[in-house]
Image (cartoon, rainbow over all chains, first blue to last red; front, side):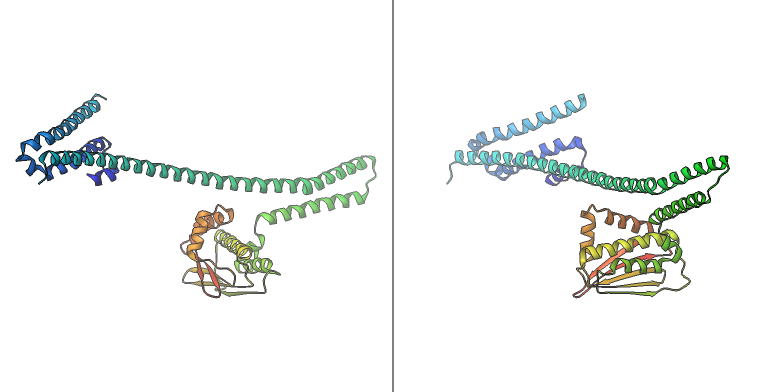
Length: 74
Length: 269
C-alpha cells in the first residue's frame, strides 16, 4: 500500500483515494488484529475496543460509497 | 496483571495513534509529490529561460554584427561611392561644355577602387578567405601564431596528415572555428606559457591535439562548465561539434593539460 502511495504515477488517478483509505484501514486493523485473540475471549475489553473498530469500518464503507457515487455522478 | 479496561484503552489509543500516523504518512507523501511536481516545473521554466537567454544573446550578437556591417558600408563604401557619383556628375557637365578634366576621371576611378577595397575588407571579415584559399593546416597555423604571438613564450605546430587529404569546406570551416575558439579560451583563462599543437589524421579521424602548460580542465570540468555556462563561445563550440559530429577530449596531467578535437571525416556530414 505504501509503495502504491509513493509510486502513485503507476496507478490510475481514480484509484489513489481508494489506496489511501485502504492504507489507513490496514494500519489500524493491524493493531486490532494483534490483540484480537485477547479481545475475543474478554467481552469487557471487546465492548470498549470493538465500537472504535466498527466506527473505522463504517467510515471506510461510507467513504467508498460516497467516493464511488460521486465519481459516477460526475 | 493489567486491568482489562486499561488494556482496552491502550489498544484503542494504539489504534488511534496508528490512524493519525497513517494520515500523517499520506499527507507527507502528498507534500512530497507536490514538491516533486514544483521542482520539475521550476526546472522546466529554468530551461526555457536559459533557452530564451541564449537566443537573446544570439540575436543581439547578430544585431551587433549587422549594425557593424551597415556602419562600415555606410561610412566607408557609401561615402566613397557618393563622391564618385558627384565627380561623374561634374564630368557630365564638363562633357556638355566640351571641357573634360582628366584628373576628375582619375579621381573617380580612385574612389571606385577604394570602395572595392573597402568592400573586400568587409567581406574578408565575414568569410574565412585564408582558410578556403590555403586550407586548414595553413589557416590553423596562421591563426594560432597570430593569437599566441607575444602572449606566450613558445609555440609549436606539428602536422602529420597526408598531402592529398581532402576536407570539405563546411567541415574545414567548423573545425577551424572550434580550434580558434579553443585557443582563445586557452589564452584567456588558462594562462599558458607554452602551447604545442599537433594535427594528425589516422583511420579516418582528424585529430588536433593542443598540449599546454596552463591551468588545465578535465573532461568532467568541461562538461560541468558547458552545461552551467551560458557563454556564446561554448554554445558555438557545442553547435559546431554537433554539425561535424566531432568530440572534445580534455585531460589533465601533473605538468600539462591536453585538449583533443576529434572528428571522423567519413562520418561527419
